[in-house]
Length: 79
Image 1 (cartoon, helix red, strand yellow):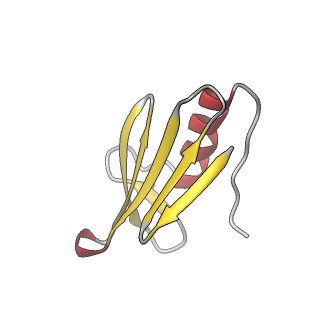
Image 2: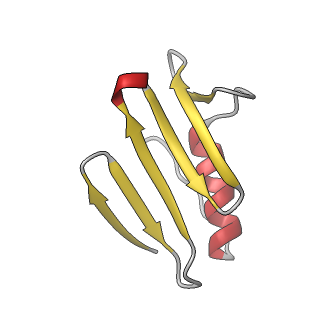
């Protein structure tokens, strides 16, 4: 996976040509994730970033989407 960052935007590029984009939205206090499966918005929930629609965890969704687009198990975790 190749990555590039410009300001608050992180782009992950996969060998198959697909991309995942993570973008901060400071005025909204959100983080947005765009993947093949769609777009996701997250707000800080005290100890993690939670999806504004279903409450799912940002790192879990990022891991699921990267696994789907990368074709192999990938896991992102807080460091």
